[in-house]
Length: 229
Image (cartoon, rainbow, N blue to C red; front, side, top):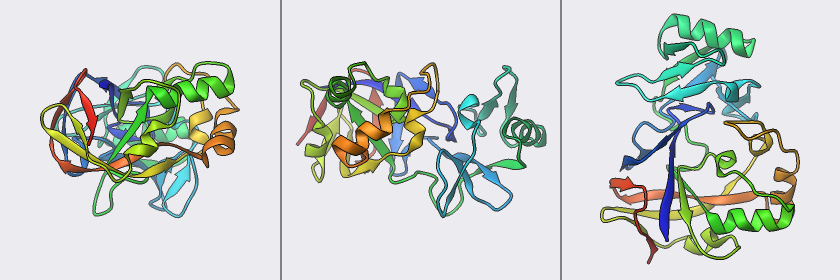
């Protein structure tokens, strides 16, 4: 099995970036979801509304880019601002039609469930079989896409086991990832879907992929060998 996609989201719930290599630390991919859009009540912008999150239509029309030390937010019209600038807050507020700020993570991680998320090509093929059409991996906003044989939810078999990636990193998948309406929304070239969440709910208990803790940090690179042990 090989690592064939690495994705990082410098600003939570916005479009992200594909990488060829990245450092992985205890928190997850360096810089992943380290910043987030917040409303006036302090809730994080998301595709769903919960105790911590607030659904904000329009987030996926924005994109986050890595920056040192602050990421850059890109608007639908192509304008870019450093995320902590007041003008960035004003511009994003205008796009979302609500007052928001973009803030760095404090004491509680911005991740929905866990530090690193993984999906497999086998699971994507299983969805293809169920829907009769291919499913773009970007819909699931996972950090790592692993090329695996077959057509099944193979990640479920990794739970509780160490997964080695390359020569340095060891992850331990802990739980399946619960999905929300975000996977059906138009994003990063994938049009609005409408049937994906229903299919995942009917055939896999509303879950797709797994989240993992980092047992040994290090660097991962495209085409690294992936080995559950």
